[in-house]
Image 1 (tube, rainbow, N blue to C red):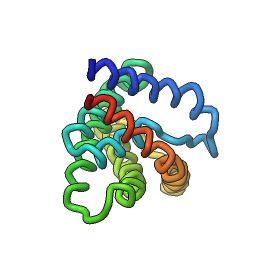
Image 2 (image 1 turned 120 degrees about the vertical axis):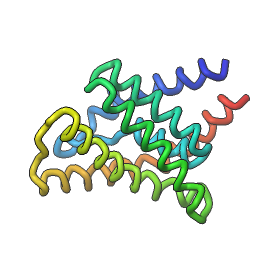
Image 3 (image 1 turned 30 degrees about the horizontal axis):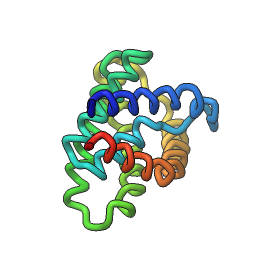
Length: 161
């Protein structure tokens, strides 16, 4: 039952991303709910839950439209890294959560660039375009993370029951 609730929540996150959030873009850049949810689960529940959440959300993204295994790989690594580094950072979960989303956005951006360039041979955009895209993405994700944090905590407790 726990797995069904968890997968249902992750499907809801993905559908909310493609139906609602994708409509709000600034210069073609939109918030990344799967990244935010992966990061918040990793900060709140640790390395293992962050890895599993990232893997599941990335797999859903890849299976329902995307480059196969790119999101699965990058989200799983991101969830693991955030969970690992959260344990070594001092502070309460609330203060760490928002800053972790900001750092995770930059980290995921770099991981995806490397995957696209080295594994798929995709050329990189100009440095200015990459920087603007990264900054807008950081702002969007940082604004949404405090809103999503209580939802992630509540969902984590539901899944644990």
